[in-house]
Length: 439
Image (cartoon, rainbow, N blue to C red; front, side, top):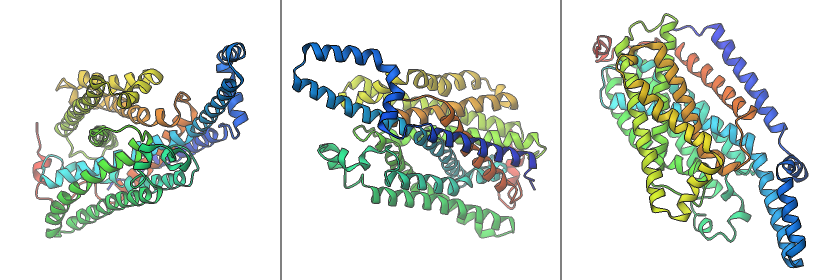
């Protein structure tokens, strides 16, 4: 049995406390009034505004000046909302990122059962522990979405009736994009995922006690869950991410979110496994198991790149205005994180993991895994921030604090779950094959 060490427990609580303080600072430092917002941004645009005012005074009519003043007021209010959105958006990125890891870990776990994989049986408890974050993370995210529906933030612009009014495209989507139906769908997604996480854990614990029917039940129910997952994961990606840009859509988006999640999930499985081995646990896990996890990290990184390039290339080549605006915004205002995450998510893992020998070096895979997780955090960041904070972005205290807060909760939940059951499942028909697995 694994014992949740007091040092790791203290570390997780420290992350939560530091993260909560940073998140609190992020909310307190946002402007509370339009005047504060104008004052915060005035030093950046003072010269430009002065030049514009001079032109208006010299050349504009009174009517044009009034229109310009109205446009300035609308822009100021827009910037005010963006500044207020920043701590909310930072927290949302972290909540979604860690929930996605838990969810796709559960899907990867279900795939192992549905396909009757033998190599991965000794890693099942690690997968179950990571997936244990799903109900907690799901509740946290659902509360966040409820607060958004109560207009505590301005992340989802379609939730504002004044924005929808007169916008033909958004008016035509009201049947789907409305707060009650949005929250109902979210509740169904989270409840379905959480039920399978609880039920699969229950069946493997029963299997530990020589319940011969548990294995067959889990095999069939894993296959059923994967159907549910494929549908709800796609819809979730539309609801929680793509609807932040309600005028833009991509038919590839569900798969793209999945690819980012599955890379992060396999990486997290590898990191937790290597940590346990460094603490003297999971001696049964050998270099071949870690080699296979590293192969998945490599393969899914290529898969992510294929989907990223397919989406980007087709939109760029077609050059349809309502489609290219998505990438223009990210390339012009988020060039460093946008191009940086492509390097971290493709070039780096491909170059370092293409060598088979490197996949067996624990510290090397661990460092690579941490960089991959940073890259996919940036991927989620670039999906969310341009739509919610626009040019008012910066990776600072609110963003780092949000990651620390949710990472602390994630670590506590995962390692607490590991301490509740034997680290190796019992009575699985493929356990001997997994124990003796060699690549």
